[in-house]
Image (cartoon, rainbow, N blue to C red; front, side):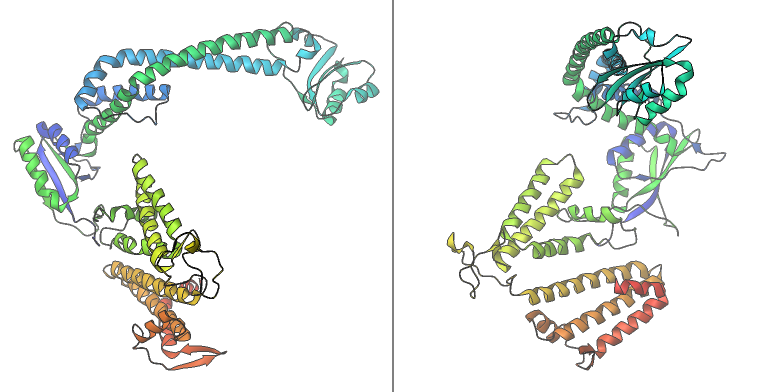
Length: 560
């Protein structure tokens, strides 16, 4: 439980005739972590895909094209389908289905493109429409030019003041002014300058002819017809989606696995007559794999275990009981421990719900969180990580409810009974006389709660540094002894805090009388603060050890 699953390096060796069956066996058992073969020599080379790879890949490409066309990437089949039935149905329907779907998808894309073009043309023509001038009349003259667009301010007076021969047409639009200016070619620089001063944005001349208003009207009518065609096409695609979505998704999953199997030889060593598959598998599964190969391959393939060599990095398969498994979520968030490191999942399983329960400590909020966690577990089965998080929230909610019920005696921030010193305060006593009184009062026992928090934090951090020491001692003694230095600093700080607290709280008194009973009472006073000589010695020793192992910069973490 504190160590990952024990792994063994092994090779599967066999006759080339049994390669297909061997690959099927390996995928069926799902126990081998394959190591890619990269070296090439005279005897062994990277293998070639199995014969069925090409056909399966082509079908898979067609299916994925259909999935994109039908927008069913996130579709979940309503029921499980048998593999043999999937393949039989797909072989009969794939050609027709692919043809219909691709034709409809192409038609949809073409119609959408036409609609976009028409809408873009309308947008381009809108500044020209108010003036009633055919589009072709805005250009083609040798002595005059035109500028059409929108202005933030009216440029007419400025244009007429500077120019003699100028014509300005205007139309007020939402938030701006549509303007068409006609002037002599030699006045273009002056017109451009004045228009720029009035926030002019030019509209490009569209590549159409005729009255802009009529062209816009015609385009809108065309768009309406195209939208009707698009609706019919979408309806046809929806019919295909409803009828075949389950089959397409199931077939895509099945063929993805088949292609993966068929391309496995690209990752292994093969020769003319044999193959070698290298990998790691759980030690407990070696015999099971050999038995399966004997049964399926009739002795044409066998497993040979290899001794572990220095520098090998076995894959990590965490080994935890079912109740502990969800807490691997936290491990995955940070980093999976190496093969030779301790798996801290069990520590999180034991401490997180306790800390969470103590932090929330409310029956009402705890039950609410428990319900949320149960909902996530039951309704988010397609999202394994969120389902794990739901289990964690459920455990935390239950623990928060227990703390709220038996330790703090409150629900939704309201105590079961009012404090003795303030009998008129709000409580649940007016609704139901719950015969449970708080062991800790959040309003009056603040020092006690702080002492408990410090004790829990010290235990938790100490456990973390001990695990770190165990992880490093085999291969990195320097960092292992750095963990010891941290333990000394942590212990010194804890002794000092408990020394100052003395018997001020039940927790500090208990700790001083039991856990720290061995600590001498010798101390001094610095600036009015009691200082334990023992604590100071531990802290100084830890700081020296930390400087020697991790360097002086590591001391900044003591303050942090």
